[in-house]
Length: 70
Image (cartoon, rainbow, N blue to C red; front, side, top):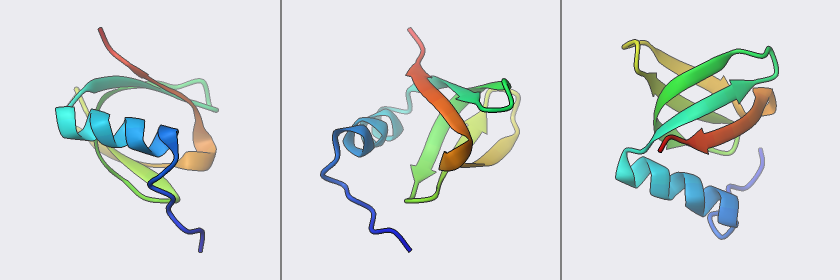
């Protein structure tokens, strides 16, 4: 299992979005675009609470990008 390096800028940025409850666009390799708030992250996944009310566990390997709204 990979060590979760909280010193990486990308990890710190996502942590800040989690803390601020920032709404984000999540683009997947399937070309799906999800919109919601990231509730938590770990070395393998992020957990997204979508604006539709659905919660989704997303494997990092399936991400194209994360982009904050506004």
